[in-house]
Image (cartoon, rainbow, N blue to C red; front, side, top):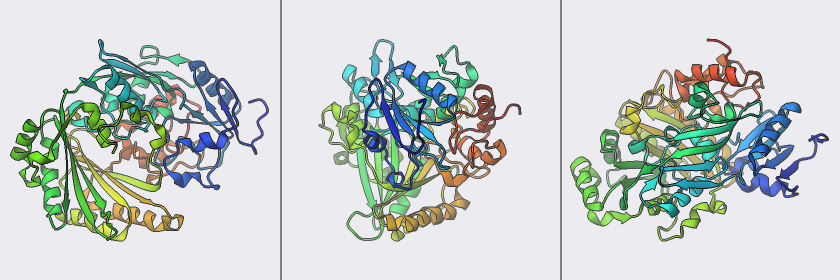
Length: 491
């Protein structure tokens, strides 16, 4: 890096130099809003294969005052793992080739390098055992480095909690040192498991604590139109989903109609950790309004349920989960909320009516309760535990660039309309659904007070401790992005 010309992008792969700069840059960008000519480009892209490569990249960027962006899977909703907002010189540390996963069935653990995808993790576990899994998200091309660092919610969340609740970590700190669980100290270990590891370090690997899954699980998907009484059924869902047995997870997805007409329908996606007869009994007793029948229930192996959630055929080879070329790419914008009280019917009607104004959108309700309600909100930085009934994700996508402003306005207006009905003081948000419109950092020396707007939404009272840890381990704010944790030297 001795003779960098800031006007010319570079791409370096270890151990060999490559000229495929554009291919590597675009390879894992999920939100194609950030692939335009106007999007700032990195000076270079470095793809490490060894721990020492990561150490060198940190020290080199420090020496030359170059921003460092660390990309694991490229699904960051605002693209901050591979771009900057303020046009400063930066480098991407792309971990695509640092993705080894090893499984230890006897000790019920797996070691996943930070560039591994969730699909890499799930497939490697399934090749070794049919009775262990890992509680994380449903999209196989998402990188573990980013998802675990800010939480990691998936269909096992009610049974086992977050991905971040089930890990140990190995990292490179701002001084280029490789630190493990013992040497990093309690404060840093606490911070990186849900507080955004990229604010403090570069994660090298996660040691995953695997969890028990049965040989047979049951999936169902039931779709209800407005004519079928979708509002009534969603209303019932929110009253029972939080309190269902931990073995049952039912997600509600409101979505635009796919037949070319304006409107919405609601899809109820269920995973039961057990056989269909037991699942049917629970549904009949606890949620008969959904009308689940024996014919709706599909028994399969756990890894087949992973494929189903990823929208792959359940008879696909396991290797499909490791195919990053299947990553979904689109222009999109998202915002999130938390429901801590039941939403009144007027709010449900606002949500469903909003689909009349847009061509392609989804609203997800992800239920909590179960294990999530038993973990204290200060145990990790992720605070949305007891009392958070469900998470809400508003997501809108579009193909034509000319449609961007209309869709931005849709999600912004819907978010504003929902203000009276969701969590307050602070109005909460899930940090893995990053949203720069909650308050953007301007410049490198961002103060704690400026960041409080979004910081308390993501982390509630844990934000103060995160900022104090940041002041301890990265006092020069080297690990900076536009929504990284600001530093405090004392409370």
